[in-house]
Length: 115
Length: 112
Image (cartoon, rainbow over all chains, first blue to last red):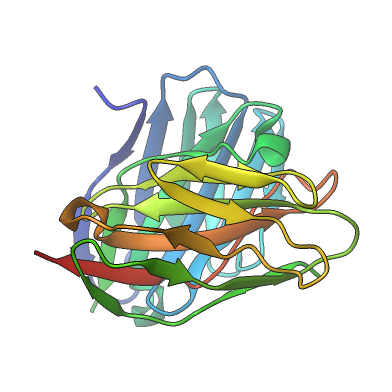
């Protein structure tokens, strides 16, 4: 089994629908992240959490919310999806040295299409 | 703020060709620099890193040298294989930042 698991892997939805992407990890890491990948733009940070009680906005948090239900679980919600939120979403984890070592561990991605 | 600029792709090469992907950065202080690789259908994984000026990171035949004077961290491989076909991302983290800033990614396709 993968260390970082994302569900669903693919989702097609309609404008205005609420969507939740879930992430769970078995690495025992404190830190979890949600990134969005768009062609030509690379990865952009949506939200990050350094522990269960510490959640922070990234560079593109508008239109998104997150919940850190446990150390191992970090979910991303789109309250009212819009077409420009169509993208590939990645969850990642790191230990407390992650920013120094650069070692993020990524899930396989969740491809979201908003019609 | 911190930012990374890498060469646009896509890049198409024949097997055993030399690969260079340029990466330059803007940051205050002395950031750590990284290359990540994303194989088709997978998440990103760390390829190599360098944490101070003149450091050389290396892995799987790839190398990159942290050049402070030119604010660059170019990725090189002397002889690519079909299995090197992937998207490559340059990234940096600032001092005490604990978050990575990624470049746009460069798609590399190696033909047999």
